[in-house]
Image (cartoon, rainbow, N blue to C red):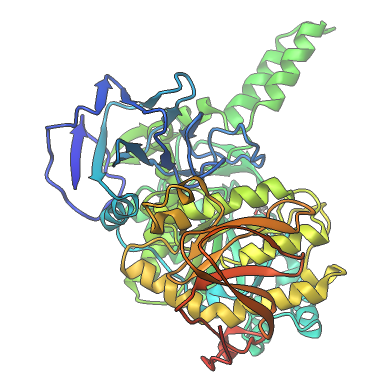
Length: 627
Ligand code: MIG
């Protein structure tokens, strides 16, 4: 059962696809006091949801915030990241209560952080829709929610191939070398990504001199069926005679200050302005700029910085300079410390979001109020363009809100090359399935920091089951293309398994999309009555048949697995090198060497592996191995 409640005059976020009538008989389980919602938790109530949020599957015991932010440090104490996914499910007395708080404004979920047995949701805006779901079965409740928010975007099949990325490959020659080295090392490859340095001075829709002949590059890669995926950022460089800037200024397409002058932030290109993506005319205009890519056969993109990210605003920097000019020298210690503080806290300041304005139906509305749907609307700009033209496209973005899943995927942003981040990305991948983002994935190997051969191998053993499979790493970090590592032979075999399983993965994704299911989910969701499984979060169902038990700790070559019934265990070193055992229901402690991958299927099920290929275009359903 699902009911809609409305408070004040909510802004239409485009999160839901169903027009429900408004109810007024709110369940007594929810107590509303002004902008706060309270729900009493039982000692053993589990709490699920919140999409991209960090930590585990059971969200109890911490505080989380929906306020999209560009934060590259995903430590355990972080409240908010790039996405705002306000869907939460509370287990109460053998029943489940689901809430979706549909508002573009900030929402804070205090889940037993202040008071152990209380969930307190603070909504920073009096105007919002509240959807309340009740179900005796957790998974069914989630399915019902997914029906409400509509069918997820999935990329064409080649979008599930392996992608190689780095910030940045700096020339067309370097990109061709990447393709060549994958081939020489017998590593499959379907996509190569371009990060911001392919642009001229970080200007969207321009090319640096090292990528001048992009068409030629595209054509050369096409011979090997490799897709080039350029990045586009959510900002426009302030520069006289730069057409995108000039056109936007002429038509008032950018977010403004209170006085209607363009709001100027500093990002990679230096001073920049932000398109008002919430307006349909701005979205159409922005989408039209992709013609320079589509004309040469590029229909794959990734969108960054769309929370939107602001390294500093001109307003705040001007203010600091003003203050300095009014100070008498020499400075005392207090002055220096406060200057230091001001300079180091310029990034993503809430006062900047408060001072930047959208113009909707000729009314100025602060970004602070509409903040969480900015990124989604950038995604929508291109997504709706391709969908309206009925064209294939490949797209994922960083900032997101529920609803964006109908237009594109997302990736998990700037993770770190540590085992802890590998563990987090498993839970994020699952939780993102709950809120519709079936097409998601984390930077394989870790983005920041230096990965290690063992970490990237264990990571790959999980990542081959993630729809978005992309190896990406930051500037100044160790290069992490798979052929750089001395365990290349193992990495290769595991990656080839992705291609052996690709037909299964694609079929299961389509099935999950069409039936509102979770492609990745905790095994416990499939066995609601199993009391032991309910406490286990790291046994993951992949589609209908496969259960995986990933390793996410260094030097851990054994792992605990609990089976709710008899299962076939398959330990794979390669598509044609594996052993299988039937395991009884119950507890198992199983050896998993670094080059091995554990999967399980039901005793009576069969799973087919196809011959791995160097590219998705070559795949055929030849069912070479029957498991
Ligand atoms: O401020 O484009 O998350 O994947 O490599 C950093 C450079 C901007 C953040 C993205 C990351 C990308 C990087 N970007």
